[in-house]
Length: 51
Image (cartoon, rainbow, N blue to C red; front, side, top):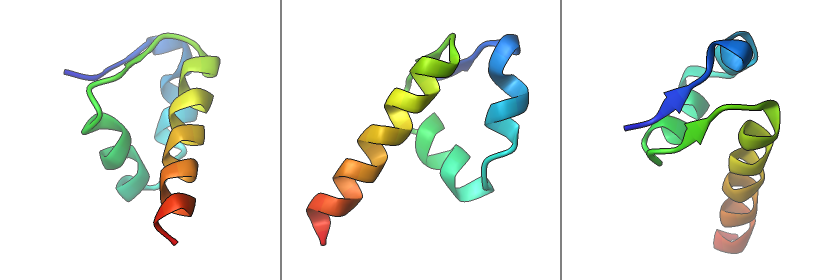
């Protein structure tokens, strides 16, 4: 189950609903802004690889 730390919840909530759902489906632990950036980077790279 994914976890978003209170310290970055505001940044997480600023994302689109679709993007938040993609992140939460990955069962990630987002404790810092760097964790969030890392998962976003992985999503972008996967999308680029599909093109």
